[in-house]
Image 1 (tube, one colour):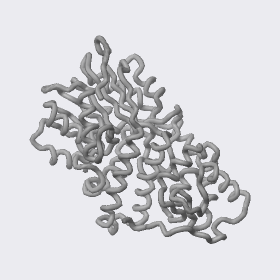
Image 2 (tube, helix red, strand yellow; image 1 turned 90 degrees about the horizontal axis):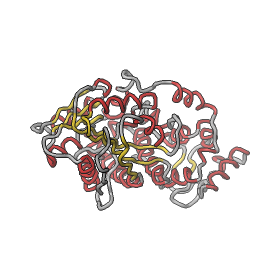
Image 3 (cartoon, helix red, strand yellow; image 1 turned 45 degrees about the horizontal axis):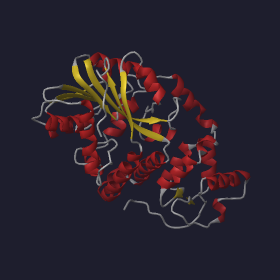
Length: 387
């Protein structure tokens, strides 16, 4: 188990005084089927004063930070977040302190070539040993495909194979992987489909691990920004990287993929997405997990591919991310004693909240996981999806 455990119901009255703000907070939670200091696994247990005040002032940032501080607890934070989102409580709280954050997200390009490297240093370079303990054997840090899978390893293998089949990979093809991570797709495609691949990443530790793991295969791992790419490939794939591109750069990203893809080729884009078009980024995720990240909407992706690609297929299996995140969380909890001294209690609560809050968001269908199959010039006689 982790460094902090649920300790039961708190009945200390001073933690929730009878102010109008606290009454409103309890009423909003009740609308979501959540009780303050209730007995159900998703009920919010207050451990310190000031939690409602922080949430009304700072929204999701205050909710996440107060959890990191140990000010509230729940046996199942994932289910608590799911219920909050299903009740759409985030639309009923408008914290004024986040107006500047929203304005910056809308107006500024926070994903420039220079800033793009920040997420690699802050998130992906935490340590390969840490991710190896949490992920599957290939370090696949994206949603698994659970249609016929019962384990994380099976779900990730099924996802990689699904991508290869959707792309129609054949021996001898040259494939570009934009945002290759630890190289799981490239390694699998080379081993099972006989292709050669070039992958780009902004994480030094990812590139080092991948080069060692897949030595001997026809794979090239580059520490490079995607905007610098300009060479021909038979296929292009991008799995879990588009979330770091930003709306100011969506068109540029698609232009890069278009100029690198041979005529008649296929581009598979695997990305988390949101249900509506707006550039707002969750402030807690932006501050603590993915600096400068941003989820696209269907419309934004559509705008970006206009006159560049034919959208041949759009596949949503976002519910599978709930299962993937819960599997990662179970691995994280089991491995935590090995990392406690190095990373500390506050990191534990941050990472636990990240995994479980995201699981709750996918469970609530508040965010999605899409695989787009895009064709340069369209597929003659039409594209047929594999399953």
